[in-house]
Length: 91
Image (tube, rainbow, N blue to C red):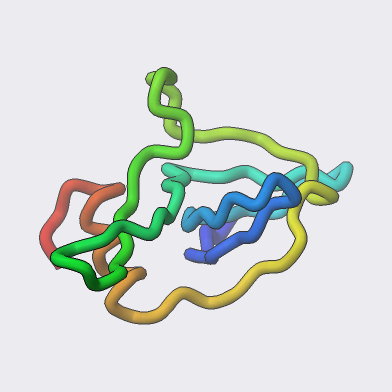
């Protein structure tokens, strides 16, 4: 089963990046999901990533696909930063 890296906008308003696997029964598996947040750096907006569920030691989560408003392909630099954070490998 292939895990494609995607940016997802959830119906809660959260924007997350994750490796994603579509499952039967309208479910999606998220592997190492991270929430993307806008942060200000010296008055300039940037972005940061942090684990989607910070209090869990799990790294894979199953959600209903109807909670996803839209998906997209991440920008290359964001995908590289995400994969480095998710795997611990410098890319």
